[in-house]
Each structure stands twice: as C-alpha cells, then as structure tokens.
Length: 54
Image (cartoon, rainbow, N blue to C red; front, side):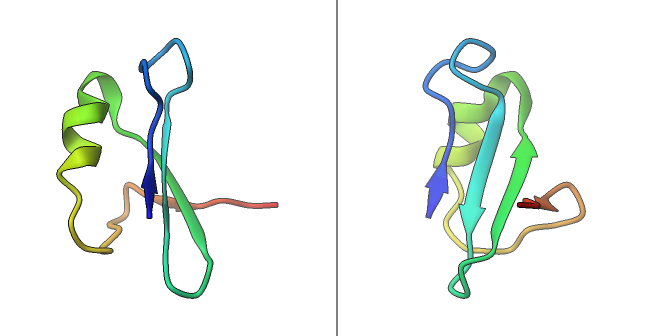
C-alpha cells in the first residue's frame, strides 16, 4: 500500500508504504511526489525510506 499527500506541501510532505508485516516506512519524495509515488509497483524501500516510529 502506498499513500501520499494530495497536494505536496499543502496537505503534507510524507509518502508512506506498508509492507506485508505491517511495518510502515516514510519518505519525502519532493515536488514530484505524485508522479514518483504513483509509479511505485513493488515494495523495495532503499536507504531514503525510514521506518515510522510510534
């Protein structure tokens, strides 16, 4: 699952992905968030993504 802000910088800046174990990762994908997030097809977070802490 991928969730991103409707309007980057207005409704938020973080994009979130959840793996099959329920671990949530977050990243700020910048001004091209909608394009970048919409292109995510597989769960493969790199070092840019951080685990969301409670």
